[in-house]
Structures are given as C-alpha cells and as structure tokens.
Length: 199
Figure (cartoon, rainbow, N blue to C red):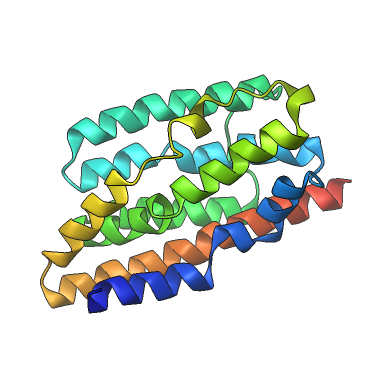
C-alpha cells in the first residue's frame, strides 16, 4: 500500500458512512420512512453534481453515465413521493457548495470524488439490503443502488490518477478528500436532525 492510499484510508475510516447513525438506523429498520423521503430529496442535490466531478477529471464517458445515474436517483426519490430534488438543509448545502468548489479543479476533484466513490459500493449494498429487509412496503425504486453495489472500477481509476499527480497536487487531492468526507458525514447528520426536529 502506498503512502497516498494509507492517507486516504485513514480519512475514510474516520468518517466511515456505514458507521453514521443515519445509515445504521436504515440498516436496522429504525429509520422512519419520512426520513428516507427527506434523504432522497436532499441528497439528490449532491448526486446531481457527480457528473461535474467526472468532467473535471477529464472522464467524459463516465460523466455521461453519472448523468444517467442521477436520473436513477430521481426515480428512487420519486418512488418515495418526492416531486423535486433540492437542498434546503444547511449541512446538505455545505456539501454541495464544497463539491462545487472542488469540482472546478482537476486535482481536488479527484480527492473530492474519491471520498464518495470509494465508499459507494459498501453503502449501496447496505442501503439496498435495508430497503429489502425493512422498507418493502414503500415500494422504493432500487435501481440506483443495484447498479452501484459492485462499482469498484471508478475508485480504482481515481486512485490511479491521484498517484500520477505531483506531490503538491496529491496533497491538495488528499485535503479535498478529507473535506468532502467530513461534509458527507455532516450532511447525513443534518438530514437526520432536521427530520427529527420536524417529528
């Protein structure tokens, strides 16, 4: 394992989304359905930006696929009763704003994307299982999660691109990864807390 890999692994271990109370509750079936609806509506504003991140990484074909994946997310959100995708919670706005900033630069876009893409196979698997085990009655569209459970190629490609960067740019990529990992965690907290306040 390279020094860069160790740095990135340490960052994601500290902010492992599967350990977040929101995803833990989803996995256990204790997350109210209304919170899933809020999540689908709010988090979709981040999913929409993934295409731009891949464009910034000079991967137009992957970016086009990510645009299709956003349509799949809208299908998931719509199946839960949402008519729109929008960020209204401050922590989600913080996530989207941070990503927009990093997706304007090649090196930082790699780190920002890695924070999400490296975790996505595991989180998609967990969320899909949670939907099937505990939320069948919602009849949620599972397609988005199905297509991401085995998606190991994209994080591997991002890592390869980061390894090829000069040290200064690697450092910026690592910093972006750390910031987006924090923001992803905070966004889940904001969604969970906002819905709890409503409840």
